[in-house]
Length: 150
Image 1 (cartoon, helix red, strand yellow):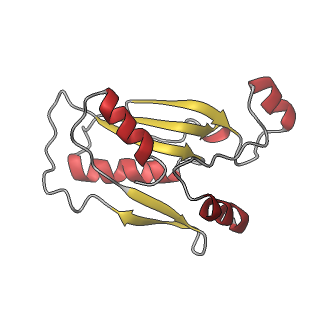
Image 2 (cartoon, one colour):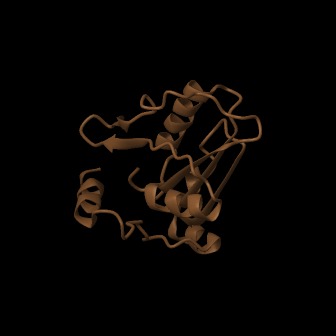
């Protein structure tokens, strides 16, 4: 709903998808946990056709913790056989393969937001060492406050 909402809507138009299931998870800097702001409780229908899959979209994938929680929520709602494709705009290189139990994953740009790669490693991988992703649809002040409180 937040970071992934805009790219999810764009992809839904590109793929002519009419069904959307908003989920919103947010990192809580006080508890260092993940809070569920919008779960899947509102969806009364838990059926999915065999030829359908669920496209899970996130703006900025750092560690993959929220995506893994979303995958778990989807599986609990639609069953373990649900096919899930996970995409993100950016993805921290160190955690690029951290989301499990999905069919396919891809991303647009690799980052080093967790700073687990050295500048030299980033240069070899063509990753901007200093880049921190804040998207135009996000509240810049809120995002910077979160980063500074981490």
